[in-house]
Amino acid sequence: MNLADLLQDLLDEQASLDEVVASLDEGAWDLPTPSPRWSVTDQIGHLCYFDRSAALAIRDPEAFAAEAERLMEASQVSETSGDDFTLGEFRRLPPADRLERWRQGRRELAAAAGTLGERDRVSWYGPSMGAKSFVTARLMEAWAHGTDVCDTVEARRAPTHRLRHVAQLGYITRAWTYINRGLAPPEGDVRVELAAPAGDLWAWGDVAAAGDNSVKGPALDFCLVVTQRRHVADAALEISGERAREWLSMAQAFAGPPTDGPRARAARERSEQERETRARAARERSEQERETGARERIGS
Image: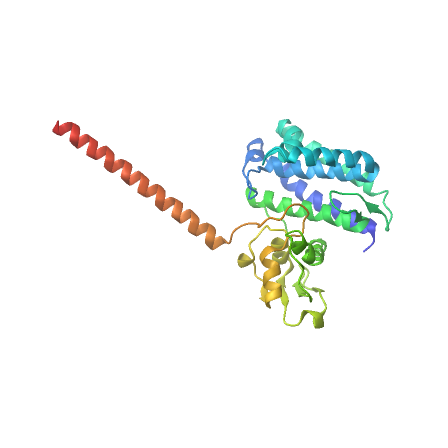
């Protein structure tokens, strides 16, 4: 796929999420999403900040480097200081203005990315990225954070051919998943065969080098796992071989410090049941103490 077509896919992915967000009432912007501490506002604010940062990286690499340094310094202050730096301004906007600010950031990115050549490289927060990889990463971010928003407001977006970009990024970042955790990537490959939304097959990985290590199933499920939107135990994937199982247990297709993603549904449900059991026991103890106190007062 050429860069122009890839950029159009990015714009279409953003527009797909725009349709969901544009229909939200003011209260929905404050709803908590699956990402810890993040609301719908924060999900869109994150996309807005980094879309505008991406545009700056293309237009003015030196200005971007200075802004990235300020972000790195701010992130060292506390657990939430990085979010305060990237999201603070967006959070302070009235809900009616947040959507337009995101759209403005998307327009800035589209204009800047339209100047890139096929072989250009773009400075980013780690190593520089080729133009296609750079645009693909922005598409993956829009889809992944959009998934969090859709899960929160119970909206459904039909899977499209654009998932191929996310799936390919998920495959090619297998080694990154290990390096990012300070681990040596294992030798050999993993064969990935995915059912595309249109019914065709998407495949990556050398069959001979993979041996018995393979991942098969719906492209959507694979994308949800490598972007850490679903636990691998909750995905309809057929995983064979220790190398494949280990990779998908910690797969991370995005930049940033290593994260573990969501817990399996069974573990979440078990935790919720345990919390409810503890809460019920506390309520019963409190009621017993009140009854005991009442009897003692009557007896006195």
